[in-house]
Amino acid sequence: MTSSTLAIWRPLRRVLLTLPVLGVVVSVVFLLIHLVPGDPIVQMLGEGATASDIDSLRHAYGLDAPLAQQYVHYWRGILHADLGSSLRLHDSVLHLILQRYPYTLALTLAALVIGIAGSIPAGIASALRRNHWQDRTLGVVSLVGLSFPNFALGPILILIFSIALGWFPVSTAGTGGVRDFLLHLVLPALTLGLSFAAVLTRMVRTAMLEELGQDYIRTARAKGLTESQVVYRHALRNALIPILTVIGLQFGSLLAGAIVTETIFSWPGIGRLTLSAISNRDYALVQGCILAVGLTYVAVNLLTDIAYTIANPRIRGS
Image 1 (cartoon, rainbow, N blue to C red):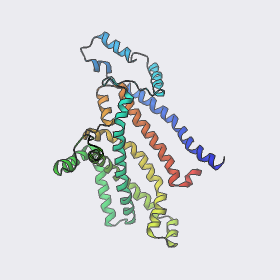
Image 2: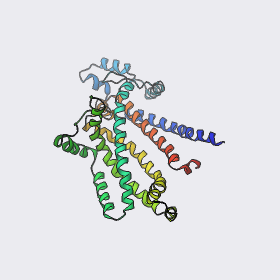
Image 3: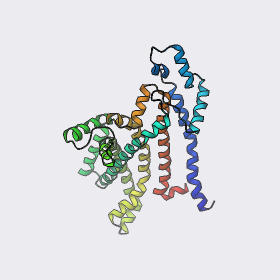
Image 4: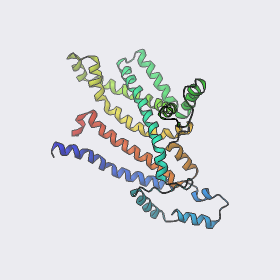
């Protein structure tokens, strides 16, 4: 193959390899939700509903069909961008997800930016000052960050920055424009991003220590390169592969953690929508929310895989 053909084929091959993964995600989401105890029709109509009403509504939503037939119908709906209708909200599942998804994505990306912006400089500084007081201090701080779960850190941030200092609003996403939206975003993004930063700081430190001990670093210093060139142009670039791996994996954790964070801050994202759907046994809506999160996680891992080749061109040939 020519170089231009290879440049097109390799990203395409990665996309094709994700298709079986997407099939597994869809199948698992469909099967798991049917193992949840409880009848969504009874939940919706109430215990006083008659048997005929229950059977009629169950038939209207296709829940009386065999499981295999429901599975085929579910796949057919996905291929036609139809995820069904919510039993409780009486609206299209796809429409509900598209309404909430931007809020969750904004929260997750903001947490990701906070985590990366704080952890990479801290991890590099910790590696360069190994076993000094700076390294030990950052180690203690990152350990404290790892020790605080979202459901504990969120209320603490609310007490300090909202109630005591009055710097930021407590909850919801704000409706007063971009500035108001960003002010409401700060505390939930910090709740997610600080724990992520603690994990990534330790990873950056470990990766940088490994690279700084390599022979090519000593050679670069012997050639007279400045310390910033040695650290950022050579060591950090080669340390990016494990760092990118952790970022890609932690993105899924941020999506999962968003469920708790959105509940604490009344953030109108998919997390709160999922909890509401689970409590109401809204099968179609739960499936749609979990599927949206799963597909996002698969897409992020695909982008991470492609980012490897950008960070380190030597991977392109492997």
